[in-house]
Length: 182
Image 1 (cartoon, rainbow, N blue to C red):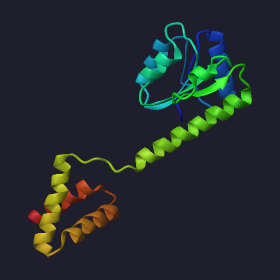
Image 2 (image 1 turned 120 degrees about the vertical axis):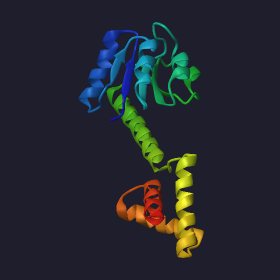
Image 3 (image 1 turned 90 degrees about the vertical axis):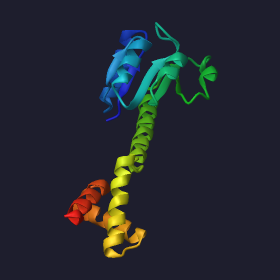
Image 4 (image 1 turned 45 degrees about the horizontal axis):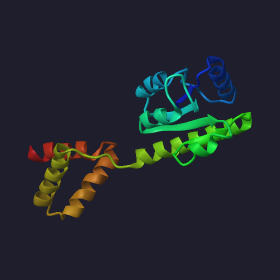
């Protein structure tokens, strides 16, 4: 589920956008009338979309955009005469008056982008701290010494045992160290 926050100065407009999105299968996390409320909502979330207008009661869209946490994208709804000022800032813009199908298609596109970003982040290998790296290094050295393996063979052995047992490499290295030191 992608977090969607609607931030518009007029509550009835914000609720209208929420209603349209929900009728089309999107889940709206929050409806806000100020930038501060929107930022407060983003603090509790990892990523998502903030749909807002050019000017909120307490800040301009640009101020809100600058304060958004890293994983959030902005969909800005603006009048045609202001559109050129807003382009080129990594902000997706829709021209007012908004057509429902354009809103839905744009939000769907943005959701797909966030989903791809999440998937890509999950595929990144997790950074190990010094202690975890030391366990793996010690297990490799023990295998190299006791079983006359090369470093590459020892590393592959730990990887294979890790995959076969369904544990991560650090846990496998700890098990190897515990078994071989007995």
